[in-house]
Length: 401
Image (cartoon, rainbow, N blue to C red; front, side, top):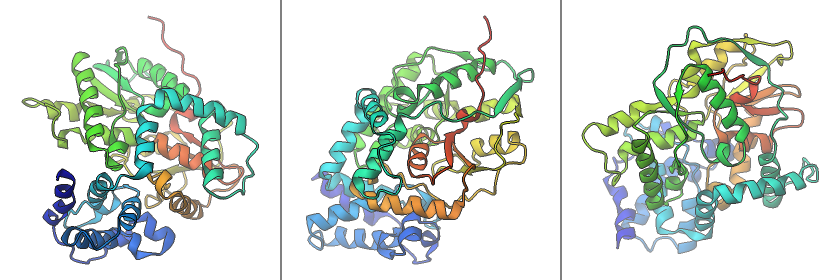
């Protein structure tokens, strides 16, 4: 009964005025040219399905539920404020399919499964032809990418932290990938936070941010992850939460809008104010570019990056004029559960990004989202290096207490 109620909630959304603003920003439409993949097309089908549930077969409804990257670009573009990804999430909850269960297991068991996947990827590295196509080849490339650490030559060096004030007490929220596989990012972030003068507390026992679970229609699992994280934050004394993944930051920022988290008084506002991107915290420091810096650097702006994007602001300031014009309309195609439900669409969106980016061998592509890094690094053209902005930093010495 609850699932049927969720499906009919779309009627409460503002009526689509057919302005086409969502068509201008939808990565799936841009990559495929098929309007039924667009937010407007999905909204019309969802409205019809809510009015007449027998209109589509269960298989067709499951397919419709898979056709969304959950990037949120259409929400920001819609003059009515219609949230099509939220409606798709409700549909995914109604028609879960095997892929949703697999994604739930993959995210909730990341600490166990991801390191094992990275070891498997290390064994596969070099054995997958770059031109190989298909779901299996794409998955194998991602596994090989997960095991890749330390191959990125850093070219930005911290010079001075003298202008950094003593920051309040902070905790680091690394996210699933940096906690389980790219632990070098976490180590670099810890060193940077300490050099910035912050009082870094021991990391709480964080859960996933929950954002990708919510996009997959796993709303109760999203709430449980959020409750775990809010509880850990309270136990730590409600400190500043430092993030270095745009998607994690976005997932955490959604907590005040979730039901059942038990925020009291102005605690939701305190939580929102506590979220701080690491690159924004680093704005007080002075960085320099070394001789090994590439001639041209591209920045991929994650769909869920804060506005303005602090990672882009930081890289623009410290890269010494090397940053190519940023294409803020290009999506990497990661899409969370879309990787399992419709991997061919994810690949087409990634291909469209690389066509727009026009990166050449020797170029570097930097991003501030762990999911974007995984997608970009596993689909990059030959000779193009992809890294998180933490990869660009030379090793930071931790000050002696």
